[in-house]
Image (cartoon, rainbow, N blue to C red; front, side, top):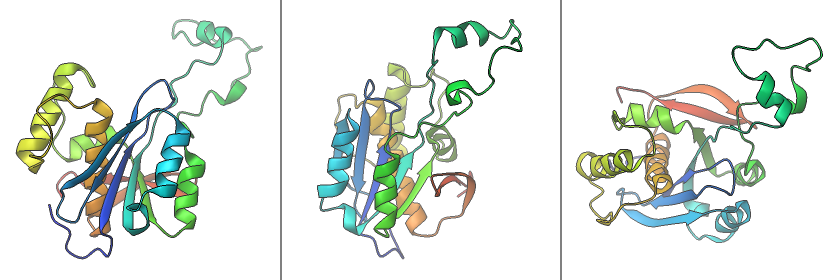
Length: 208
């Protein structure tokens, strides 16, 4: 996969977790799909610091994954959410915005990047894995799934510079996001699924 028409020199993938309890990762690819940087973060402030100070950002295209908000908000919701128990009239349907399925983590950081006229998109990591032919029959993010994904990236997409030891799941997902940002910058065919804070969430064509 090589850059042909884009003006950007770097392509950044951000695999974003929905909270600081889980790791997020950033991958930077150059125009020849070589891994320039691969790093792991936990706190949103550290991610913000990277985008404010990294020399790669100003000449890059960025793809950030969309984390899903899987929090159960309070004990009452845990009780009433059970699929065999109907909701009473006294239960407010959208209490605490529980119907929102998308986490807004790092939304301000991504918005600032867009305001700087940096090419930025978002993506669903599961859709990208399917589109790149990187799905497996194993439970997502288990050790065997990550081993299969890392081996597939090496063999199918020539990421031979990856270490022999197992990379974190978020690092592998960040590589996939960076691959998509490179292709998007070179006008690959995509479909818009929805938007998050005016940033499109794109789907890669399965046959691209």
